[in-house]
Length: 494
Image 1: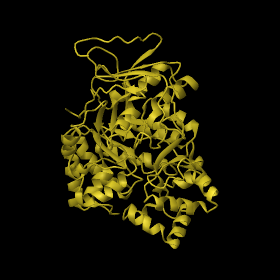
Image 2: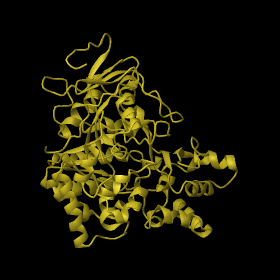
Image 3: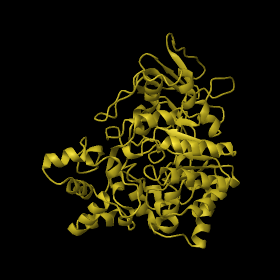
Image 4: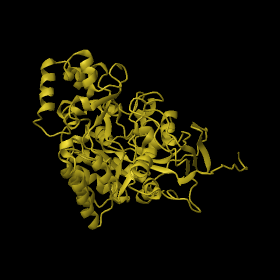
């Protein structure tokens, strides 16, 4: 209560600075109870949103349908006001009306930016279109965005070339912002993708963030260590590079990403029409099994459909909680037919979990001194299925990296979740417990702290998080939100 003090009995408990989630998609459903609960229940007090090229701004009302197709992985319900988010300032005017529990910072997404200016066109921008994109980046940076994010395996970001991204990052440089990228490859071409990301940021003169650094596909395991050598070489030349990672051997994204991007250039709706054609299905099947063009082939990386787990579907939910392999065997049909039919029956909107990574790579990445923790969490509702990382990343990092595998002391892993991201992303007065810093704190039971969820039940709350304090107010206690809303939108250079 105002004017009074509350004493929390911390006997036998640990007190940490609030955890900072450097890789969030929480902006798409900002202010929703389920977005708040999945963050705060694992100790997150600040997040950096707008990753992988996807944001709710800037919007071109004429291409809003394409943008919403892209963003459908993040939400089933779009705000009617979205057509008005034609600039970051207008999005801020909207989002500032929410009573927020935790703090949020924003990047501007390249996929959204390109959609606003060019739709899903598979070509270079004209000089006029590039100037328009630069103007939109400039407006966002002037109003407090912290930089530009890209998602170079997703439409329409996949259609962009290196020079386009350099030119946009040059605008970011004017405001001391940064470039954060879901690279063009996290599989066979990982090293080429690392080189491109470094080249873009180094040429433009901006700090680089590499999103959810990993490699997919057993034949590629070991490549991240070589990529880390490239990163260290760039750092030795004076670059600042920050890597984020979630502590799981699987990732989650759209189900349709296994399909070559050339079939998606006219949008998801047109892809679904194509999938109804038997000849096109056979063509896509052949391309997925024996690709003739380069793309991030999640089907091969997951070693086939037994490595692709259906997390959530909006309408036809029969395959949820099963791999496509298991589902096809249940129906006694070809797994490709099962795959195509799932997409058709859900209008292309499905999320899938891909088991593609190796533990040695995960350990090598987290041990790098430039690596921080990020959830990459996507939650659509309180009961909607998701990846366990959405609710459990930070407790799992403590349990997995420190308690079980002894890779770090407790203080070292906590620093990767607090002080290091605060320093790298210039988050003022956060990341430490000290005088004149914001009172963002996590109180946890060391013996109990662990994720409480599973792939089958991903929405269960973490164990051991006793209380979460943001701005001096208790926002989470006894596995419940208290209703306090001290969160703020944190603006770059403001």
